[in-house]
Image (cartoon, rainbow, N blue to C red):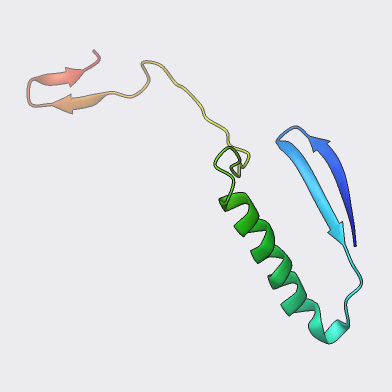
Amino acid sequence: PVVFTTVRDSGVLLTGRMMVDARRRRSAEDAVWRFVLDAIDAEPEVSLAYPTQRTYLPDTVRVKGEDGPVNP
């Protein structure tokens, strides 16, 4: 097995490769992912992240309440 590491804008990309019999591909992939996720779960200082994008639009949302508009 080999793991390649690449730095991306959203974090670190790990790409793993290993030789597996074609008939065992799904079970091997499942076993590797379970091992990796269990290892991450066992480390309190490590967590998974994903790319996100947030937009802040000040004073563009107006809500009409009982006493008239909010943020007039």
